[in-house]
Length: 295
Image (cartoon, rainbow, N blue to C red; front, top):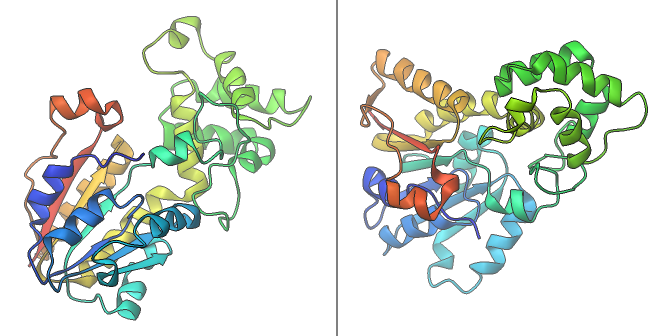
């Protein structure tokens, strides 16, 4: 089950009230969204957007008999289309929007799409199966130069040169089809001391491939631009990010909005999870929350 991170902090900073309209732009398993829906009852509404059709079906079946089901609108789409979706569904002038940029635990543990380097699965890494290309195609068809740039830019991996070179060499013999085949190539590309670190040596390369496949960083900026258009005056946007590349984009976008006199940044610095939350849910350890209010 996906455990929503920074749950109490999200509710505190978004401050949903009865009768308001909110958008969960990455509704996932509904952890944050359904809590927000409860706060805006009676008469409030929630728009939930989810790019992964399978995740959305799971959520739809779970909330079929929810007491406020008539107040929930669910859409299978990407938050890059937030403004268009809000126009179609009557959610312009919303009171608040949440972006949880984290990958679902379901994707890691149950999707079977090769997101985890700890499981033997076919390389895919697409959140939506209509995405242009999969991790399998990147690993087996992209040039050494392109692979090096992807792993460096999106993974900030210091051994990107070696990893890219060895991927190209390994695929000459046979297609690198599964996650564990790729992990083996990565382990053979880095020094032994690097493999013995607390973080798995494949972590950064897998992150880089996932970001490239799903165009995650480009989507963040576009989604935040749309959020500003969709919010009413005084409305709030909250963004949870999970690694430095995401947080850098969010921080810079917030600063740009502020410098143009469009928003007030409510979180002077990123809000991190409390120790107890990290202890009970280790996947929350890198989470950061930033919030702005539209002027």
